[in-house]
Length: 261
Image (cartoon, rainbow, N blue to C red):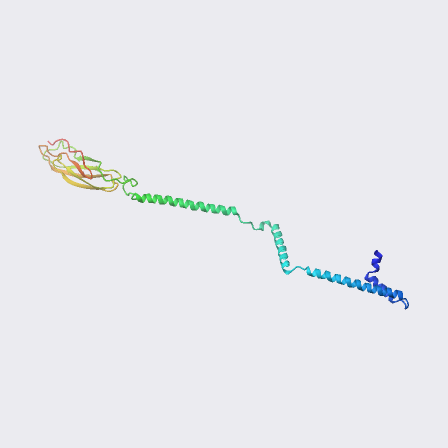
């Protein structure tokens, strides 16, 4: 079979034709063989040419379109880029850290909550301070946070100077000073205290008044008797206070002890 195939190859056929063409006239059998071979060769060549043409047409039809080329080139480029990034891991962009973002949002929310809490506490203290009339100034005995109460005299202390006239000569000019100390509650709203005072054991009285400021707890008032010491020892006599407003209160009576001589 290998020899027959070689016999019908285009090169071998050409050689046979060339050889027969050189034969002498009269050799018809050979000439007919040559004619047959020529027809066979032409037919086979034509069929092979058609087959080749169909193959080339199929190959030409299978050429990728421009869009396919672009997609293919893009895919190759992305693969190349991925290969480069994989070879340079330290240059590859890292994905965003979701955990870090959540932590920042949590810290921001905590800061807002803290500011709101501090502001509310400051507002409460501010409102409480102003509702109580503010801080009293210059008086250590005031109580600004306590509720104010109406003015009321709780007690009156009495003192006298001199405390004794023993050893003095009768007829000597003398001034006796009586001091009354009024006491009111520490959370008093303040106001006016009206009273009467006496220097002769209540037989005669004189009217006076003092003014308490809010938060004040004590006030003093002084009054005097002046004259010569009588030989009958009628003066000086005990003195004291009779409160008439805002409430009624009578203080103890005090006077110098002893007698002139």
